[in-house]
Amino acid sequence: MKEFLIKDEAAFKIRVEVKPCAALKDLNALYFIQEVWGEDDEILHTSTYEFFLTKEEITKLWEGLRDE
Image (cartoon, rainbow, N blue to C red; front, side):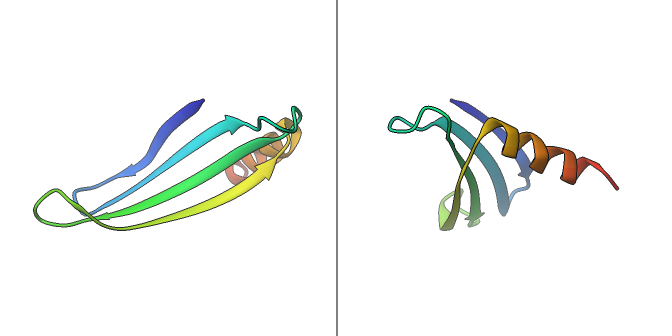
């Protein structure tokens, strides 16, 4: 599993997790996890966006995001 933080502010965080799928060896589960944090360092709300992509599709996504 790979995990990294995209945005890390006191009230708002976005992280990404990538895990290989157990059932289909060519697919990866790609999670975008958005967290809203309160003043007491507690999570107020979490939204998770899940995508199933091949390694080639993840590469294409990355290339599309990096091109301006």
